[in-house]
Structure formats: C-alpha cells, structure tokens
Image 1 (cartoon, rainbow, N blue to C red):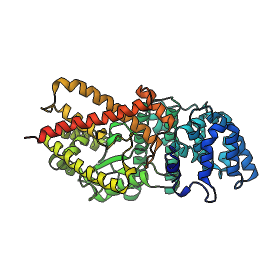
Image 2: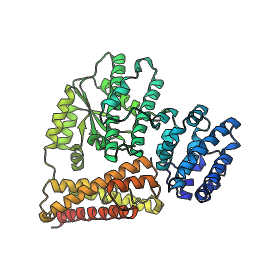
Image 3: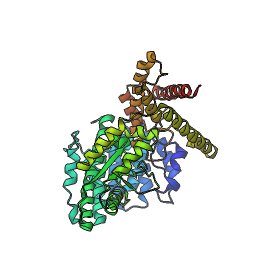
Image 4: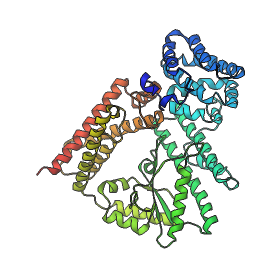
Length: 498
C-alpha cells in the first residue's frame, strides 16, 4: 500500500496502486512530488505534465496543463505542500477521463483557491469532490446557498425531488447525489471556516434526520402501493450519535424499529426492510448510511423490528445495564401518535434505577473481551494498535467517560466528594476534546487509519481546542486517557473489594 510506504496522510489506501494504471511507476512519481516542494513550482508542474501526457489526448493534456499552472502555485503558498500535491495527483487521476469535469474546472479559475483548500485538508473530501462536477458549485466564492442552522434547509431540497416519476435505480441514485451535495457543503463550510466543528456535527445530524424523513415518505408510498395499507403505528428510535444529534461525517445510523402488535407483522417488517435498503444499498453513486440494528431486543438473531410490548418487557426485565445507559441517549425520530406512545415509554424506562454493581460487572466483562482481542491482534500485527487520535473504544476513551458520568451522576458512594467538582470539569473538558478529535478523524479517514492526521486538520483542532501545537494536543489526549482509565479503575476496584 503506497500511502504506508510513504507515510502520507491520505484517508484511502491505494491497494496495489489500484487508483492508477499498472504501467505507471507511481511510487517513483510520488517520491518526486515529495522532493518537488524544495525544487519549486515549475518542477512540480512538469512532473504532473509528464505523468499524465502519454495516456491522454493532446487536447485533454492542454486543459490539464492550464489547471496545473493555476493550482500548483496556490498549493505552494502553504506550508504542507506535499500533502496538497499528492491529493492533486489523485484528484486529477480520478477526473481525467471526465472531459466535461475538466472543461468546467478549466473554465472556473476562481474556484482553484478553494479547491486547493480541499486538497490540503483531506483525501476523503477530495474523493467526494472528484465524484461529481456539480460539487464545484459549492466551492465557488459566490455560491449563494449557505447553511442556515435549520433542518428545513435540507428538507426543502429533498422535497423538490419528484420521486414518483423515477424508477427504483434512478430514485436511489438521485437521493445519493442530493445527499452527497449537501454533505460536501457541510464539509467545505468547515474546511473554509464558515462553521466550527460543533456546528458541523449539528448539520450532519440535520442532514441525517431530513434524509430519514424523506425516505420514510417514499417507503410509505411503496407500502401503500403494494399492500393498500397506510402505515402509521410504528416508531423509529435513534441511538448513539444520531440519537444525541452529534453525528460525524461517517457516522452509522443506530436504529431500533417498533410497531404495534395489533397490525400485520409482515407489512411492517417489509416496511422497515425497505427503509434499510434505501438507506444502505450501494449503487454507482455510493450509499447514504450504514444502518446498525443490533440494539433491538432480538439483537442480530431475530426480526429487524419488535412490537411495543416486546420492547417494553425487554428493557424492564432483560436488558443489560449498558443497554439501559445507551437508552438514556436514545430519541424518537418519527412523528405520529404511536411514536408519542413510545416517547412516553422511553421516559418511564429511563426513570428506572440502574444497579452500580451490574454496571461494574459488565465493564469488567467488556475489558476481558477487549484485552483478549487486543492480545490476539498484537500477535498478528502491531500496526493494529490504537493511534494517538483514536478515542472511541480505547482504554480511557469516550466509552469510559460515559461510564464515569454514570457513576458520578448516580452519586456513587465511594466517590471522593471533595474531588468530585474538579473531576467533573476535567471529564467535561476531555469529552469535548475527544468529541472534536473524533469529528475530524471521521473527515480524514474512512476505515483504515494512518499514523498521522493531515496538517490542515491538525491546525483546525489546535485552533478550536486552544492548544499550543500538535505536541501539546497529543499530551492532553494521552494524559486524559490515563486519568479517565485510572479514575474508572478506582471505582471498579472499590466495588469488588470486600
């Protein structure tokens, strides 16, 4: 994998150099790009020209040459030229067969400065931009449609699409194109410093909600067309980041589906399956969201939906303590009379006490499983160890903070009350740090994570967290994980000590 050999902060691996033609000596070219920042703009332009000229027409090469001459000098105005040049290489390679895209880019020199901002920030965002020339509109300086901090902005744009006149494949692709445009707008607004990380998270959540609302209307129409049944007695419950309106650029949708036991089970199971398929089916335009339904009472073993009584009885008598804690962050995302009934049920369930001892036992069990998996992965490959910026499921990370918050909020008897105020302030600060770090990591990477974050992403974090430099940020994260882990350990040990 090329990015591993060169330690470049690209979000997607070039497995077997699959992004480039096999006859290209891509590693040699990228090494030249790394050195070109010292040798100057003209040398870099010539590298790009020579790399692409043999496989493209003379006309296409002339247009691309004009683009190199415009964009490369802009990239050279930045400290971290290598990252921008590397992303430019990938970007040009992805669009060079799209004559319309190249023509549009050539004729829009006023967008080149903003294009450079994208290239310097993230390979993930670069990939989104390269997939659709319409996205170039968003980076135009005079682009008039700006985010207004309101979900109606997203709903209105989805409502303008006439899905009734589209076949299934066209409908899916149209949805994905519209979603991609809106998602890219949020990403670019963050890169361009029009919004901050917190605001971007809210916008991602608005987009997800508007998308689900739109698809529910489509599924209702499809269900009525097939069964002549109007589905009203159902509810969709969101957990995790969607439940708390703290979505990232790549968040899954953790959903649980509940329906009335008085109705036809087959119809509602089909209803929810259609919803999942429209959200997560991959087409030529990608997918909207991965959907995770494992938090339902039957987990991954039974039906994808449950009845109201089944949901109520499970959480009253059978659910684990960690599920009860997760339920406190869940919310009803549908609007109908049945959803109001489920909303009131959630309030009642969340008022039930949660046993400290049961939470402690479950944490110990989780840690045994984590340590077992960790030891096995270390034997296989030490590169699988967590990176400094990973905070979700690592020791002392976001999950441990959630457990600490539970113990502190439940007035755990062995917590030092004198230190309680200071600790809660510290946890709040670290929760904010980990949240923002997670947001940025999800903009830089999809799945496999490299050793370093892109420099522009690091600068964004340093500014928003008011840290001195990358070193101080790493130290804060490291100390924070250690403090959280040790504090939680003291509580756990005090509970099992006779």
